Structures are given as C-alpha cells and as structure tokens.
Image (tube, rainbow, N blue to C red):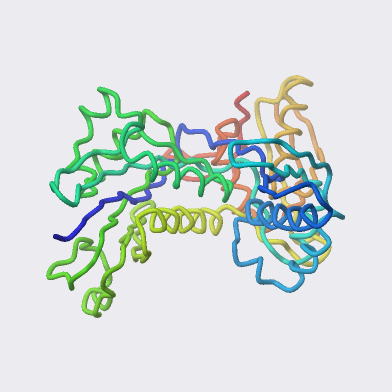
Length: 370
C-alpha cells in the first residue's frame, strides 16, 4: 500500500494589520561539545559562527564562499562572549558574536543582511495513516516529531513559524479536506486570527509508483510528463503571493528530511524577498528622504529615530527638517528604496502613504503609529 503523508505548504502573503515577528538570538548559537578543551572550543566557535552567518544573511550558500571560510577559520576574532552549560543533549558551548563585526563580514563579502523583524508563517499540516488511510490534522498531540523538526529547522534559519492550536474555532473553520485539498479560502480565513503574514501548505507523500494523475494541478506540464523518481518521500509545494504562483517539489529519504527541506525552502523564499543585499561604493547614490507625520513630541521623535536605526536596510539617519508634527529624514540605505518599504510593511508602527484607492502614493508622508 502506498504511504501518503500530506503536508500543506501554500504561502499566501497577508501584510495588512499584522506584525512581523521579532526574532531574537540571531547573533548567538549553541553547539554540543565533548569537553571544554581548546580543540573542542576552536571547532565549536567555527560552527557557531557558521550558524550565525546563515541566520543573519538568510543564505546557506555563503558557507561555500572562500572569503567566508577564511572568516570562519578566525571566528574567535568576532566572538563577543561564550559559556558552557549542561543540557539534556550534553555539554553545550554557547557563543555570542559581535553584531557590528558579523554585519561587517557580510557586507565586505557581498552577502545580504536580514534584520530581526521577519514575517511569521502559520503552518497547517495533515496526515493520512499508511495502514488505515485515515487523515488527521496536525496538533500538539499528533505527529509531534514532525512539528519539532519544522520548529527546529526554522529556529536554525532564524524565522518564526507557528502552528494552529486546533481548538474548537479552528476545527469548525478548517476540515481535513480543506488542508488536504489546499482549499485556500478557508485556510486564509481561519489563519486571520493568528495575525501571521504567511500561511504555509503542500503535499508530502511516499512515491513508489508512477502517478497516474497529478496531485498538484498547478505543476508545470513538463514536470508532469517527466518520469518520477520512485521510493522517495516527495514534497510538492505551491507558493502564491498576491495572485502570483510558483510550484515545485523536493525529494527526501524520510518525512523528517522532507519537512526540513520544505522549511529551508520557505526561508530561502523569504530571505530573497526581505534580506538586503550589500551595496558597493560610498552609499551616496542610495540616499532617500522620507516624511513621517504624527511626530509631535520628543518621545515620539526618539522612538522613530530608534525604529529607523534598527532597520537592517538603514545605514544612517539624519533629521533634515521638523515642521509641526512632520519630520523629514534623510536615510542612507543598503539596497533600494523598495527594501525600505518592505521593512516598513513588517511593522505596523509605520503606515505607508496611500491614495484614495488604497494604492501606494509616494507624494504623501508616512504616518507614525506609536
């Protein structure tokens, strides 16, 4: 009998009225070690820095870069502090790295920097038992091992994912069929209560024979007609944002590996959108001015200044003019103005200017919402 597991993995962006997750611990990492010897520490600090660089950049491929490898070999130069702790896994080496030095490494090597404000993703999962063929929605009491794999992978990549609590409200709004068939309307409506920017869904199954029909109707026709690899776990995925679709699949030797690959894929998608590419040169061509309204006190001004300075896309902030409750700032940026707008969308304290038809209007000021 063919074993079929269904992992819903549809991504639908929801930007209005939501907050991005503030991901902490991007510049720290923990590594299990055998002892506290110098050799063990040298190996651990290198591994810890590698994990931090991947989290901060959102890019796993940087570990193959020769310049990055050189920095990894001298990871102690970037280390801020370390300690040892005992855990259920054994002795753990905990490393904290210097924020400025980590970002300097990424900028000097041309890799992106992804700030700590990152979109949160809600994950709906369902499973068909391979023996009884019964289907169940995932919850804390079911398939906890796969949920743990998803959460651990997300943490290692520096993103925040959540699972529906599957209380009476969720059960009344979403059925197994909705998740199984990626019925997007019900999934999106049920996900609104969680306030996440993205909803994640897809199919994960064990393929031991060539399919006669495609489970994923949106898949590319060339992909449908190609012979399929057998005796593997397959995750067929679908991503949509504002009506645009993208689809594909990953293959793995176990459900756990397939889930891990899926979370890594989602992180790659998010990092490509939100991480800011380093910009060569003196930055003069990457300056922009913005006007922000509702700044009528010193406290509001201080809060706005702190907010802007904490954005990874911003290098420097200068107050150009203050007129009434409106402040004009000149910002020196990494990347383009579009990167700044994306960063604003991840935090509802800044309201983007809109025209009467709710379209972006560059001629109007932003609005601060403390």
